[in-house]
Image (cartoon, rainbow, N blue to C red; front, top):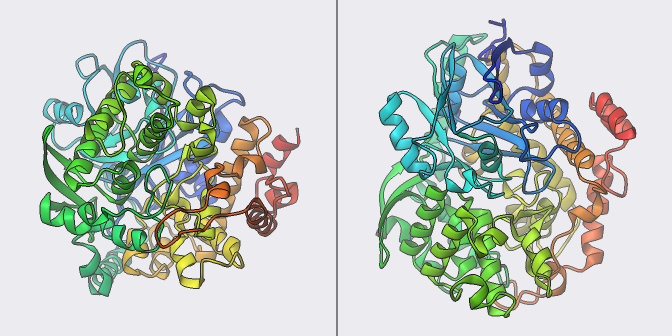
Length: 614
């Protein structure tokens, strides 16, 4: 084992083609330069995925990595990063999941697990401390995510932490998820499809080792202080009862709640699907991830005309995309769609976009009842379930929709490209951005495609004024360094975002855990390095990648918002270009959005500069 503090100490490599399993010490230089989590994912993908690799081929890598603070005694230290070349975008892809997996990986002695090749038949990888086995997974293949996890817990033992894919991952749906802890997902960029392409049904991990810390006593005292601070925050009691569902009313009130495929930003029926409706009508209990003092998960029971389901959720993104965006107007029906998507292994964000796109195509006559196999009216639960099941199995209309809204619109044509809601091929999450320039820019420039977790900038828009573009690029960049840093360290950001927990606590803790004298600015510098590396990965992999890939669909600059508080608001192309010009300049990139050689070398990415220059 390596002498690193805060780390499991090893990289584990599993070749599913040959069955070879190899363990090597975690390189200290790599840990110092990229920290872990998202940083390890980015560097491994750059080094090991050959340019031009098909994301669904055996040559792609699937990387699973906790961070240096995962599994340490502090709030929200249970985050794991999954990454691969994205089948959704063709560029860099990663996705983050909570639950209890990250500590288990660390306690088993690992800082990254790299899956390569493809198994000849359905496979299960069981990691039990130093023992690593590739087992037959035939009896789990075809099962839903939750059903398969239940079976595996029974077969292996409750003390194993398990991730699975569902039928969507098995059938290579390009926005399939990796599921964990009966309702948590690494949901974005299609990492579940990459896992499916490797015939890898599930991964089970059990770890019993201790985690070395540079100063255990100070870490323990600091951890206690951090919990006390969380409990003392005014937002703690306000936020915890509803979790992320609690922002529904606010987002609707500012006219940014995606409604009817982002046609507008205001949903008249939001009171029937908000956090209060969830708590009053379907919530059974709260549910938290490892070490978390603010349990955002809501375990729910929902009864509908289709039957009764138990599900974790819905959280806000699902309420937005499976609720307002589809005109589904009851929390019970949103929860039912949430359950179906979770069991099939479909991302509710991309899935909600795809269903809304299909319903708008049906409304406009671009998809007919004959094409679909039934009518696809807005707000119809049966239509939503029908489409999800067809997508997961790539049957009929589902095969067209399983690749996402960009490929579907390219095949359908007839103007559908204008309301295929994505950037870079990744569908937008649940914030209507036509009256939120910082949020719009955050979507445009997010390295994985349109995703809110890179820079949830809509609060800044409201705080400083939504009519002005000034200062928006600067704030987006600041957020793009802070927020992904949590994914690198292996932490949840919700303590900071939702209850105002100070970032200074993490800066104080990091040296106590690792023994490295890194300031907060040093950590942000690592995050900037990773951001430029992930951008470079997409430049390398996508022909002609640049400014043109950062533009949103035409709906956002041709169609003013028709209703609600944002009525009449819309961007012009000139405004979008102004935002991008400011952003690229501040980033040290050229006018096409390509990092300059001098910027890359300044960040210690000389090897990347040389590759791009070639």
